[in-house]
Length: 347
Image 1 (cartoon, one colour):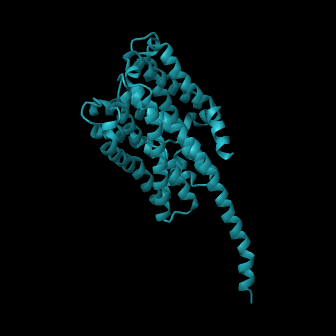
Image 2 (cartoon, one colour):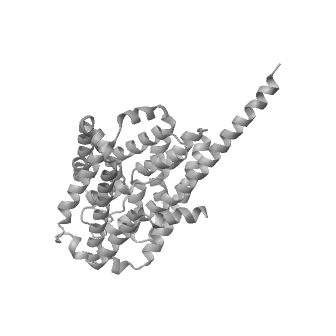
Image 3 (tube, helix red, strand yellow):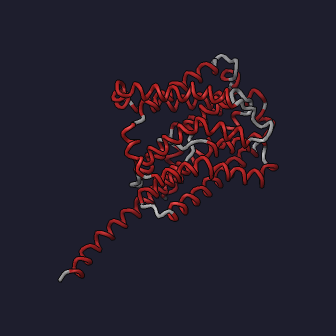
């Protein structure tokens, strides 16, 4: 019943439904959103990306980040999983299965593994499970900034020859102008406009989601026009789903075991598992548009993160409720044992 409730919430999520609709529209009318089409996607998407990261900068609280600086072991674990363990798992999978999977889909899995952690869902789920929210905010924010450099570098270093034609210096310059610059500008105007945007955060979140939908539509339009999907067949969907599910299950197992080995308390354990296992669709789609440009296989490259995103929401939502229930039981047992301890220690 619990699983069905979470699945129902995902199915009725308007954003995920619209993401599926964007793919359908790209299949029906690909020429409108493709490069050179009437939508002028190249201009519209660049403006959208700049606005989204400016809003991220405005909404990023430096006070919350300072509160999260204390748990250094948590930060090391999360960033290590995000940018080291994930890519190592991809390398292992590429050695074992790379010859059986379409090169562009394999590049999509590499891109998924190279992405930073997501901010909103990591923080929300950590809070729902009584975890270390300041630590989650710091780690998610830090990985988003580090990802501007590390994500394209990993894709450039690990992608097989010919799979991705990435000019690293030009890509880093584009990412700095389109992602880092608006983040910095957002932080600079935060003292003046922070309260205004906080009052209207619901609308800024909507802008974020609509830009992502626009980018997804444009990416799949280019893939449809190039004939990529017609040549790949339906098997890529099954492989993408199976690979994403297996990756999520493995990474959740590894993060959970690692947090226990490090003897994290409940709050840090929750933040570690949720932040270290997440990958950001919100950052991933705009970054892909800048890293891979108008690559005809961009829709296929984005497919793993588009599947991983709803999967991580379903599974981690269930885990958040389980963590919270266990935490409440531990508190209740501790409170129950106090009177007994006092009675035993009484003279």
